[in-house]
Length: 90
Image (tube, rainbow, N blue to C red; front, side, top):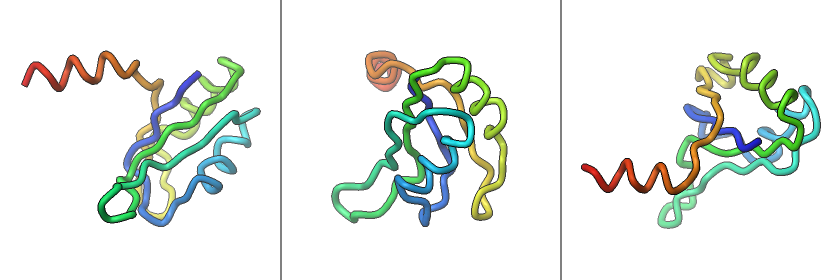
């Protein structure tokens, strides 16, 4: 399951994200999205967990949790096509 993690502190890196989610099960990948121009975190990332039950438990436990002074927003990631269509309407 692909998980969106928003409102992430700019000091959090891929390894931090992986460690946070690995408490709930196997993590296939964890990445913070980086701005190409500035090289700085955009404040969100994605975590991939192969076991859906583990992923749902991680979402439930981590959504709203304070990490480095910021309350995480954690939910199932939407498909890219959905995001593109939503932006294209505006």
